[in-house]
Length: 184
Image (cartoon, rainbow, N blue to C red; front, top):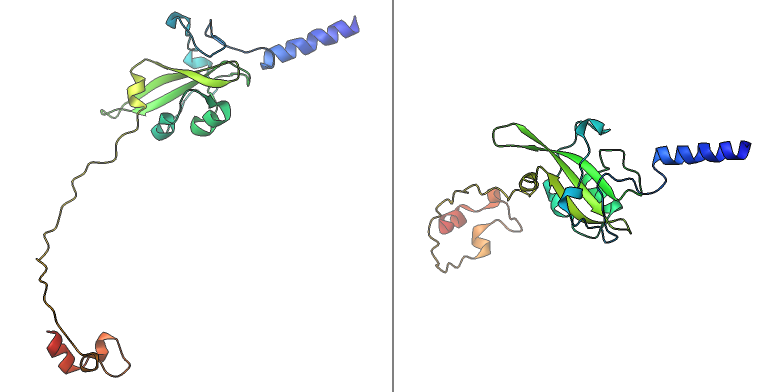
């Protein structure tokens, strides 16, 4: 009886900490990490996040996320998921924030679906237009003014070094008056 109670307690603790199975919200995730029916994709409620404020992601890092990405790589690029996903979860969810043109902040959710080897395969945004905010902005296209330069005149000038400078000297203040005159 004591062994049964202990086994039940251990099972409950493992289940509650997410160490058993693959915690997920979405349904019908294939072994390849795909979802055929878009209605099977479920985003968690924002108030269930442990990091309720979300993050302003680095859009360059977001652009590096591709099918086949490992969880460790994903963690390096955009951090740990913002909900209580277990390590062996088949999906990770994030709250992303983006600045908009009117200085407001758009709140988006980002979902990564993993295959049975825990490689990211499918990526979803809610709302879908958040994908447009996630693209890196091109480098500034500011116009750089071009300053007109004086035309270069090619003319051969021969000057003798001993006429320009004092012996074994090279600084401007060591230039001889005759050398300055020739240089002009």
